[in-house]
Image 1 (cartoon, one colour):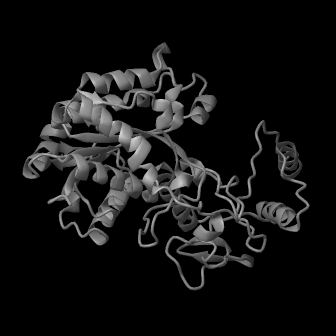
Image 2 (image 1 turned 30 degrees about the vertical axis):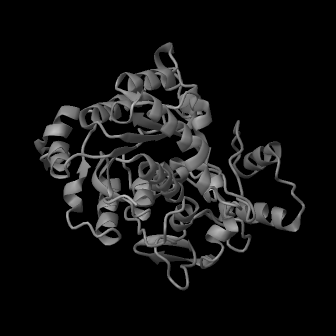
Image 3 (image 1 turned 135 degrees about the vertical axis):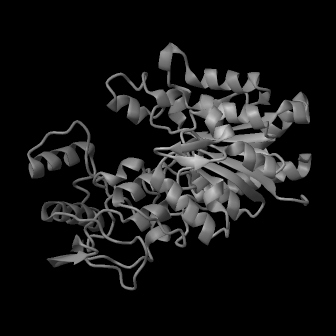
Length: 413
């Protein structure tokens, strides 16, 4: 048993999915979290205050642009967007150093979907090089370990004509950290860790060789992937039904009602559940959702092929799409990926119950991402769906935190 909690910093924290999993393990103490967007910071502060009982959460959560690293370290004053702060150095000094840095730069520049949508394949996107800011923080505070999360597309992204994963690997190695030799094997299937959603992410785990020695560091990294993390795999994968099946049903209304000044096309939850508010759906979409869900429930399955779904979209909207727009999630499987762009319309996340004929609520998206119901999300639908989609699934994060803790318990900090 370690005599103290492990001190951590979360970079690119978002609303705190990774941080939440580490806190749930009860082995870590969050020294600071850095995030530049206002609403994720607001939600993270609320979570730290209400769930994790941090009285100084507003001091620990730094809303700031991590690319401005010198100011991040030393502090900034009267910034028109970010206000004032004494910076990270003060927090790290007060904590007497840190043990681990966690987090991952925004993944849009590395995602295959993002590259397909962008006319230049995201090669000119500044987010390709945000890892450099993460690296600068690692170099300054020299944690014993770090956990860097991102999308598998990072393995094939080539901004500037070079594989970015090779640039990242060499940069961390030059900074004195040992990484897994073959990072293709660092891609983790979150469904194996109890996440009811088809989500794969690369987890780059680094160990400081000056602290443990080169040979021991290599041994620790190898064991993380081959022994300690796999130990937390679940015996049976969680299904959509297990994740959201007990939530109150939300039925289409005959007449439009209002809730908090917004139109409702579906009933409110009875009993009431926070964030389980139906998003507005027009009559055409409700009829399409009913058609598609009844098609699956009846066993006909006339609309399960990509071609049939594309034809249906053209028939109903008069538009032509090169990809199918509709997807009904299945009760007894894992859902498709919960993405940040779920906020746009949700057509690829149709609830499986034909009686409800709607897309997923914020609470359902949160559950499929494994956020606990006591995490209350604040903000518009755009804010909340984006935060949830961008987050690391807390259930996996807890498994990762426990695996790291087990290693630290064996090798010491």
